[in-house]
Amino acid sequence: MNTMNFIVWLFPVIFMIHDFEEIIMTEVWGKRFKKEIDTVWPKRQPFGLDYIHVYQTPTFTIGVVIEFLLFSFISFFSVYFQSYFLWYSAFFGITIHLVLAHMLLCVKFKHYVPGIITSIVFILPSIWILYLAKTILQYNMGTILLTAAAGILIMIIIIPVLHKAMESWSKSLKKYSEAK
View 1 (cartoon, one colour):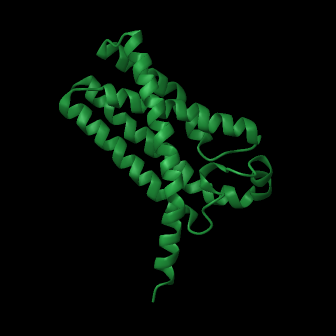
View 2 (spheres, rainbow, N blue to C red; view 1 turned 180 degrees about the vertical axis):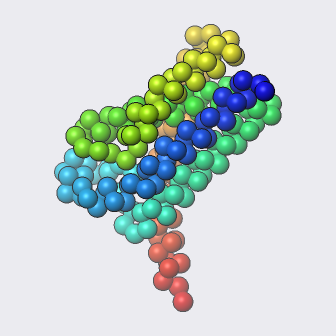
């Protein structure tokens, strides 16, 4: 078995385990800590809580499915074409996301934030995977900086786009539920 091909498939697995925690906990977390969330984030709340008024879990799950498919396609094409730059970039972006989006939110909020447990569990393995892949692929510092920039750009684009789409998905699900 090709070691790099095995490593590549850890990306969608880690992503999904992490996002299972978010899918399960976001709605109940938002209800439990509503007052505190409104105080800490009066304008733009994490997980789209400020603009998803109905169907939080299904709406959030649609975004997760889209990300999972994207990351699975990136993994598949990386293995198929034996080209790992995009995979490394996306995995780097997710690793940064584990630190910035969850650990910093948790520090600011001073309570549990959905995704923090799996962020803590996966941060060191993710860093190890990036190191191992860098070694196997023989990436130099310039390539790593380029993949890091690309990965951060991927997250800067994907997450806000999906969060913005959540409002319309929620409205569509509401409309569907009320149709006769």
